[in-house]
Image (cartoon, rainbow, N blue to C red; front, side):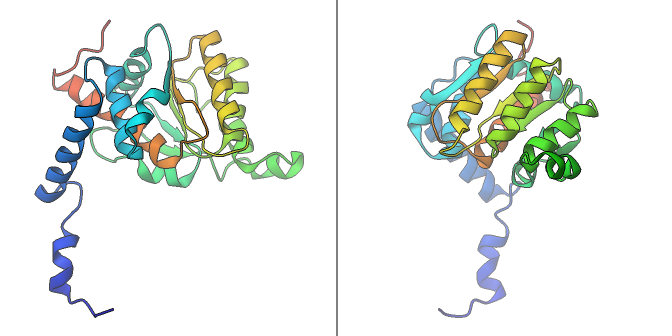
Length: 233
């Protein structure tokens, strides 16, 4: 491997999200996605983002929406963003993926809370963290985003069943153990209690997907502020 000079790195160092090169890459990428996914509804924007985040055109068919119609969770999430409601993620990786532009929502993670509860009960750290934040009322009217831990999704479902009301739930925990089941439980509980939710079926998912879908809620809110999107039914 040859040593690279600072000048040779300059072509890459300016590829941040606000540069002309980065914007051209992003726009070209989304143009290709839009050739694969229709753009007729707000729900289609989430489907397109799922394809963009996973690099898989078939993923659009795995996304599920809980609400009066498929676009309700998108409207609810965008309204929550417009109202500067908290975005609460399960782990640090999802938190790091949430854009810092286009909103004034506080973004916090659950992990790191509830350590004493986890030690006392033997439950996972993420489940205990969700329960601890719920005791503090953090999830009410918040955007609850879970991208990694099935047990966090299961704990959040229990909280919703007991009266917690997030503005919207974005749940895409990944894995071979309890991941699909946890998302199914989120869908069932949210449907029973009128909480809008965006989930997916199957084993796939993950932090990048959860962050990407949450970021799309932020983008919809920005478009609504600019008059390009109408959130009222």
